[in-house]
Length: 133
Length: 133
DNA sequence: CTTGACATTCAAGTGTACTTGAAGGTGTAC
DNA sequence: GTACACCTTCAAGTACACTTGAATGTCAAG
Image (tube, rainbow over all chains, first blue to last red; front, side, top):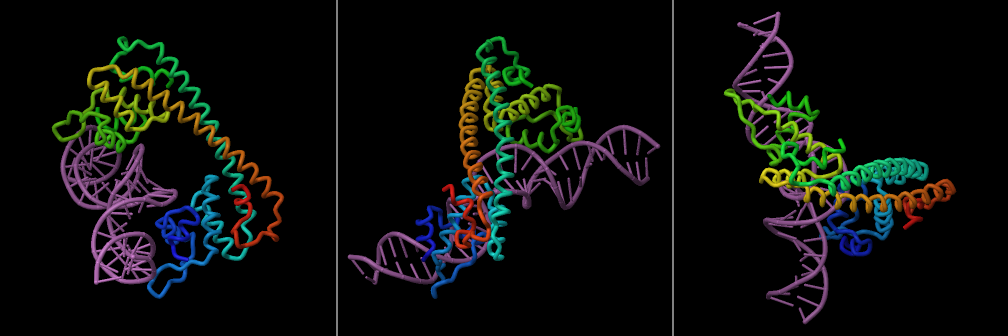
């Protein structure tokens, strides 16, 4: 299969596929006599895996690690499970940070409603923002 | 005041200050006879404003907009209030997305615990991740 | 008078995940 | 035979907010 077919099948740009090859996420495929990349269907699973990993926020670097373990012949289950758990911790922290930020912004928004622009001194640029810090 | 003093005062790198000037967030300061930047204290408020804005997730582009309004002689209150409200909407969406992602990851993590690596077929790289998609 | 901390400019690098552009070759339908 | 979609490589660009490096100049202390 040519690169365009694969791309259409998986829903990813041909440039992304070449980029993944370049980045060590996909093996270099066979070539037709004229030099076109000639994939076999297995690359579709590999791309599906990459997409699934990205969808849960794993980086290409992390996915490359998983793929290398698989390519070595081992099952990457344990490694993937660890990545997922780390990801969960990251997300919990991110949500916490965002909640706090949201609270601050709500306060700012309330302050803003109560502010009279005519009385806002120019030297601090905008008092609304600095009321919280 | 020289750039290093300002930087120390506000807690920002000298390179960042030069970058802000370059980017139109800070006016070009006076120079000493030898060519050193010679700031007056007002730049400290301006940098404090930039830091406060960044702390609530505003981009330098947005802050530049606010500063330009202030430099035109107007009070940017209204504009800042709008930016804050937009930011709040963004954050609510982000939190929603992250919650959903977290839920998916929890499911994956549970699946992972139940998987036997020995029975994981190599062709899909790692079945854990693709169980959700 | 030299050392060392500080300053200057300009260009280029950082990280992430790609995309875009240039200049060209290939495959197939009409 | 020619149009047109598709493929190739390689370099550079994108967004964001800076940092780093090179080569050089300045200031205060000892």
